[in-house]
Each structure stands twice: as C-alpha cells, then as structure tokens.
Length: 142
Image 1: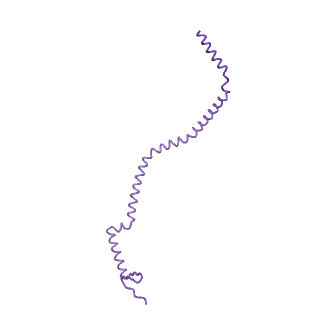
Image 2 (image 1 turned 180 degrees about the vertical axis):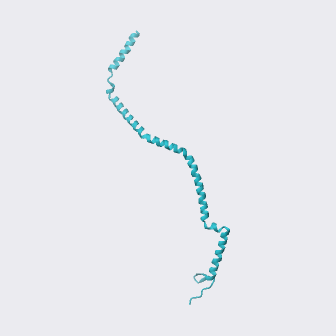
Image 3 (image 1 turned 60 degrees about the vertical axis):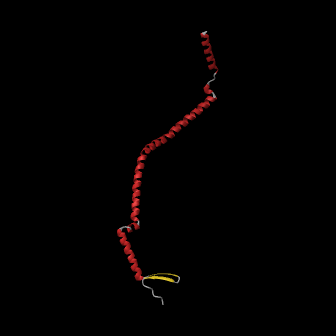
C-alpha cells in the first residue's frame, strides 16, 4: 500500500509537470523578467549616481566635526573686533578729547579767542527794526 501511495504521488507529479507548458515562453513570465531587468538597471544607475554624493557627504561629516572649534575661534575674533571698534569710536569722537583736563584748557582758549574776536570786530544781529550789537558799533551808512 505504501508503494501505491508513492507511485500515485510520483505519477501525479509527473502528470502535472507534463501538463505545464514551458514557463519561460509564458507572457507573464517575460513581463516580470523585463520589469526585473529594468529595475536592476535603475538600481545600478542609482548606485553610480550616488557614489559622488556619498563622498561629498563623508567630506561634509568630517567638516562638521571641526565646526564647534571654528565657531569658538570666530566668537573670540568677534569679541576682539567689537573691542577694537569701541576703542576706535571713543578715540575718534571729538568730545571725548575735550572732556579731558587738557581739553578743558582748549575749550577755555576757544571761548576767550571768540570773545576777543567779537569785541574787536563786532557782531550784530538784526530782525526787522530791532538790532542787537556786540563789540564795536557800526557807523550808520551815509
């Protein structure tokens, strides 16, 4: 009985194989193979295209490791430049010079010089009929 079962299953398998047509000639199989070949070509092309990008990505990753140190260096340079700008602004501002003790002397001399010039040459302001004069009075024109 065991031999009958074995012979039966073998004969059924042989019949099934004999009934099947050649699968390589089947249109569905050919379409699948065609799509598979297209997918393989696309995958190969993507691998070729992605190689330079991967190299660039690795270079960027190496550069990104150095960024924190470069940031600290730039912040230090920024602080020194800000300090230089502030000292330059302070040294260029004319009123800061005049606020020093020697600047007070310069201011005093300027005030005295202007007063002497006004007293010698005279200074007059007029608006309408009102005239205000300092120093030598101007003679009326004849």
